[in-house]
Every structure is written in C-alpha cells, then in structure tokens.
Length: 264
Image (tube, rainbow, N blue to C red; front, side, top):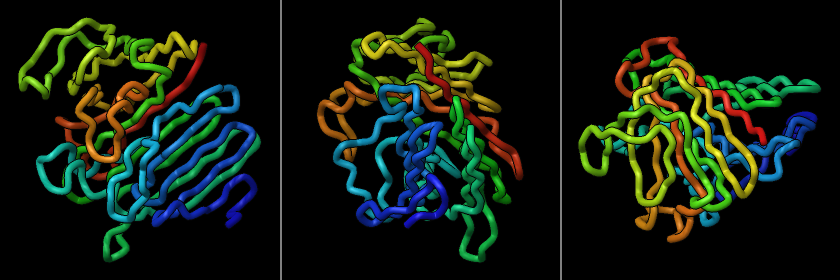
C-alpha cells in the first residue's frame, strides 16, 4: 500500500512493516514495537543495522535485530524480558517527507487510547531517534541497537568508558576504552559524554553513536551461545551498542535520544 511519496506499507508474515525509499536512503520499520529494522543511507554500501536472516515476523514475538525499544523495563526484572513495548503494535501518528529529510512519528497507546510513549525517527545525512515517555510511572528505556558488521574480527568499538558492570561475571570491571570482541560480552557502562564509534576495517567505515540524555551504554554480543532467532554464526556479523536510561528512570515527558552517522 502506497501511503505517500516514498513511503509504503507491506506485510511481513504476521507483522505490518513500513518501507521508505527516498533520496536520503532506504529504511524498514515494523509497526510491532515501532522497531527500525533497516537503514541504508544513499552514500552507504551496507546497511547500518543487522537483522536476523531467520527472523519469522510473528505477532507477539520479539523481532531479533534492528533497534528494539526495551521499555518500560530492561532485562528480566519483570516478564516479558525487556518490557512490553517491543511486542505491541504502535501507530504511525504523523509523517513529513521533505527533499532532504524524512520524519516519522510513532505513538504507543494503552487499552484506553491514552498515549504511553512516542518515538520520532528522522532520516537525513544522519539518523536520529528520539523517545518520549508519557507513562505515569517512572520507566527504564534502552534503544537496543544491533549494528551490522563485515566480520567481528575486523571491528573495534572505540571511546568506551574504562569501567563497566560485567553481567556475565556479575562484577564491576576495568576495561580498555577500545574493545575487540573475542568472546561473549554483556557489559553495562556508565555514560560519560563520549560518542561511541564502531570501526570496521573491511568495510572501511566508522559508525558514530551519539547517546543523548543517557545514563548507560550496553555492549552485547552472545558469541557462540545464540539466543532465539539467531543462527550459530550470526554473532560474527553483529554487535549491540545500546543507548539506555537504566538507573535514572525516565519521568513523565522525559526523553532519550540517539543520533547515528556513518563515515569513512
């Protein structure tokens, strides 16, 4: 279905998906979870984000890849893991298609049609996602970004803080600010105001991640213990660098944003 110039609605198995094909680039967004699945700027040779090649797109099942919105909680403090927002259908509430940028607005409503959350996506030379919390209770939020890699051995994650909480060992650890992923990693870093950089030597690109109003950065790769909807070798082509508010909970109308750019 053609919604507007450059914007289309398709069905991916059980889930409606928006497709954007515009001079600034191509994108796909699942209405379940308002989840950005794919973004390839016109100047980029490869997609910025990784999506599982065996993703089944079943309603009510979390989609593996892109940028899941983990809200209103993170992890397994409650069930379902990573909150309910990524399992619910969001509404495309507004859009603005211009020559040099596209703005898409998505809203999440409760059963009484009261807004709970909003996310704005701006596609231009960079990608900007801005999340707003409208719930009455304080909430956690993580933009659980899966970044697309040539091969994990060609990649460094740079500009990380020197300390983190290692969820695999359940302890605070000191780490180098540049990390090469050589085993499973699940670390929560404090955000200290620096942009994260994913440097991919084979693809000759640097992805720069500007975490805005965050208190945490989560670095994750499952290595050879894949979770659901991942194949045994998929870890070689992805890394999660997540923008999060995990400790200083969002109150009503507070925001979390991330801006992502790619350069040689």
